[in-house]
Image 1 (cartoon, rainbow over the protein chains, first blue to last red):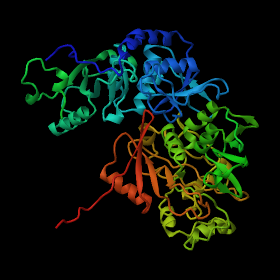
Image 2 (image 1 turned 30 degrees about the vertical axis):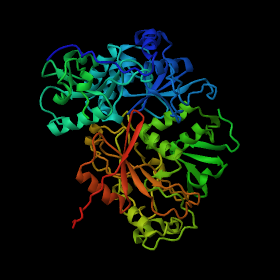
Image 3 (image 1 turned 180 degrees about the horizontal axis):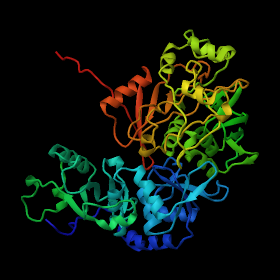
Image 4 (image 1 turned 90 degrees about the vertical axis):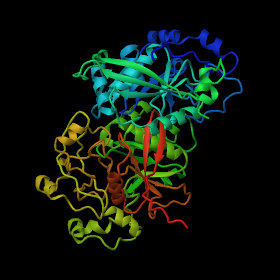
Length: 276
Length: 316
């Protein structure tokens, strides 16, 4: 059944989180990022390492792109969520030029490079030589390093362009986690799985697996979102990032409906999706 | 920069892919770095980790290297490390574990006991050097070392790989020269190509004729130099991981490089997929009785898994 993502009660953290989020919309943060002096980064196979100053680090932190490296032990969460949250371990007074490393996932780095055109990424191809990568070269390197990068990136950029915050879902057993704003302000709505095409595939091929995903999502109070990324045409040349136009997306929410909890009128969908 | 009381200094040696520690301060060197010919060397991940802590100043041609430059060395595949491997290394080090490269001797000092079953052909090849290439007496370690295999040269030179000028040996027991190498290059170490980094191997590269490459085991043929430096292990195909990356020991204030004992476990960098049973069997064989685990690094999140074949007990 096609419809808008059902309006569920958004789980904000703290009384004023919603207003804080509205006063600092992602679109404004994205604009500030696009306007900055592009920092340089290095392609590191499974990640991109960006060298940023404290102002750039703050913007990346607010927009949830990447995390500082090395990670410091995070302080215990404050009783009231602070926003923007401090970046654990980031202290520009320690660094010679006021620059520190920020580690970006491949999708994040490509989005900043290709869509927002606000970072420069280099590759250490030879001992002494560092080469600036074009969009196409960066795309091809990422295709080589990550399986199904095309489909994963298509899903990632689709959500980011709608100003959803998209983070790695590995800790929750999903491809991505999607938030309406910074995780300091709001709990994640969705655990996202990227499905490759419409045909039967190796993941979520059985009801057992669907139950497992559902159980996992239920225990962390998130809804399972499947993003089907389909080729429009049988033959798609994925050598260039322009091939992204040749893919279609379909987003499907999976909810478990519990008859025991729906006998009275006015039940909210959120209660429907609790698995108990 | 953090100013610490004990700051060591190391000088990067490009041909070796290692940094020689010229000023050694602090107790950390009891469980870091390798000793060859009475000199202390550290590999790129150790260098980067210590430089990041402010415990080490890295020099290149007398000039202090920035973190950015050290990181470039780390990312360069010819030095045998990768960003994922480095994150794993740093993570374990911060927790106090002792981490060395798989199957790399901590020291080749004379103080070690002679390993009794040195192959006779090794002794012939190395002649007087054989005495100095001494292995720990731990028989388990000897089993492990004897599982290392030969590499074949030359290696193709693509954008992602490096040619070094020096070939370095792994262990004394395994220093018999690959016959094709000997035929091609004779005894001139300077002309021998070297190591390949593990992380940037693409499938096309491996299909291009590098299928024979397994572990890296090369010989330093410069007979004047009493060094036997180990280089990184080589992964031929990113879809399979049949060799560990690190030897990990539990935190131990009394760790001795001369008698390290077998590692607590060996750590393998995972490929795109979890291992199949056949991959696990191969790894079991390669690890020679030492437990092994797989590490997955995703977006800075490091997870370590073990896959153990078990036999369910019969219950009453």
